[in-house]
Length: 310
Image (cartoon, rainbow, N blue to C red; front, side):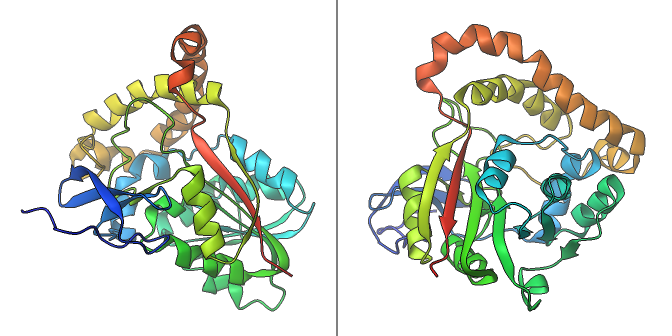
């Protein structure tokens, strides 16, 4: 397939000034010279059914780790406020926020995720569908969150505007995205159709401003935690390879091992515990290697706190 003669429009700043950096199957990845966003062409998400299969392991073994960006977000939001988590997945953040006294709700397109959250946490405040499934509520929301969501959507600025509209005037938005420059290696999952965009601080700031949000703060998560995750990537990559999912990008499972795992409640419980054990085991090599690779690693995630104008 011949390369296009001109760059596509950037989904954040709409400029046509982008450099081709990486062919990725039927997609091509460009980096915008104006806002610094890395984006795919086409900007085409695979749909909810694809994610149901591609995130098999996460659905079966709910990731119940309390992330740094969960704490960071809640520490910056009005205590006990009414909160909507967009792309809530299995509801780990919603359960954590409710445990800290917030009136937390969640919405997600994945029925499997919503059902897994109901089983794992007993949550009754998760809804299937788009933000509009809860926006009709006249009470509105004082805060909206979205963790590791923006990189999956076709129109990130449109999603930011929709979340802004779900906020009461003066309300707070807190979100996280993977940091494009977190590691000197590229994860297999950081390709389309899974990730349609890769984010830097300038790109994230520009996206928020394009959505008429006032940026309060942008911060990276812990660099040391990122190095720990780099070491943890090795067994994760091996597991996906064993399930037939490790390729440039990820794809839905279609093999017998995946179907067996999906049916096994015991494997689900063991999988959640295995995540924590893997993280703990990786700390000694991560700490030993940190002085050698510190300059080449950044925080794994970028965290944004923005506000809807009054």
